[in-house]
Length: 213
Image (cartoon, rainbow, N blue to C red; front, side, top):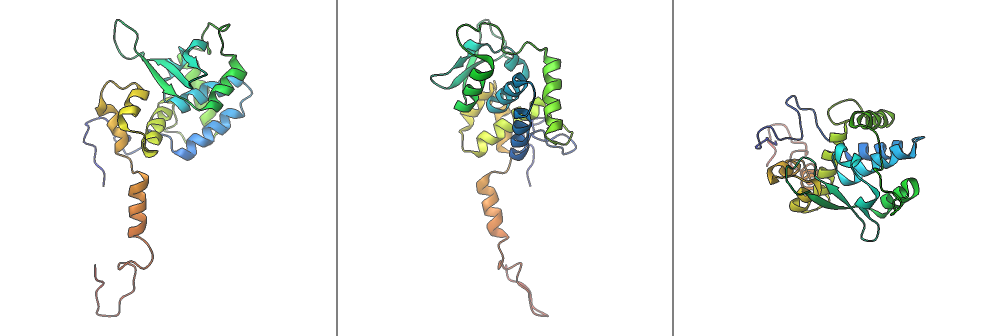
């Protein structure tokens, strides 16, 4: 049984609804985005899924934010209050950069923002793609759910928590630590072995006998 030791920080709401997209839901979301009639909707959805950035941070990106050679995007952390801009570099797969090149032509000739929608409009477009992907409504079916899904996926893939903190732009490690609450692959493997056929709890016992533990 898992308990929340971080106060209000949790991957679940007060009534137990999860706040993150599962790996299957993320895959379905990206597939639905790839079928969009508007390529710029696909690129926005892909950037959110592959970087875990906030939707306002994605909307602030320009062509110069992407480094094609070294394979990363430089994201300005908008929630951190500082006189100097705080930039975090997040590595991204080559297929995302290729998609951005194809749709937006991210080079020196492109100086404006890649997406000119307002935050509310972009939020609506992402939600629409989630509906088309067949993702049930809930706190997970949001841009924030994509962000949580990114963090959880990174931890489950063995990315050190300090890197996840950097990539997500968290000021406090306590915020990133919520992703450690979720069950990982090793824990699932241990549980699977516990319930393997032939375990003492599964063996039938003769009348009057008790299973040995």
